[in-house]
Length: 149
Image (cartoon, rainbow, N blue to C red; front, side, top):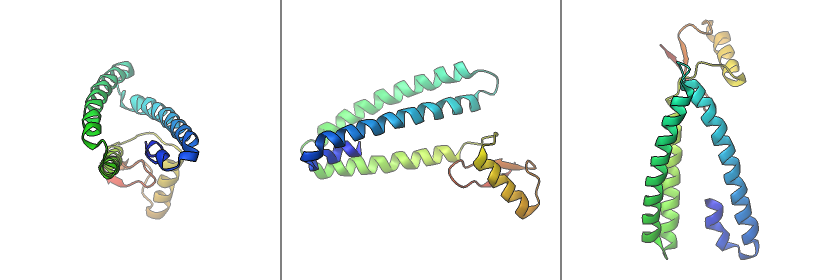
């Protein structure tokens, strides 16, 4: 979306910038699909991945429809006002990033990837605490907090 907003500012590179934005959205879609599959498997505690996937799909459909309606309203309100467009874009993008950050912090993943393994091993060498004695991974960004559970 950022590329679409800045493309009119560079008329000579318009096509290149718009294509770059489209490629970026494609990469985001691939990453989103891979993440969605991993999280669906994580939440499928009783081998009910299909049920969870269907519910997630329904929620996504409703969210997309509400988002499109609100997007059309914002577009109608901000048409012809570049400052309002940029304010809307930046504030909604920051809210989106904050909401994603909060959502990821709520995850309690119980599987190990190389990063989590490294963090747990480092924690073990520093504290002498067993790898799985009360440690709960709660933050899957780049650093993890340990909570007793």
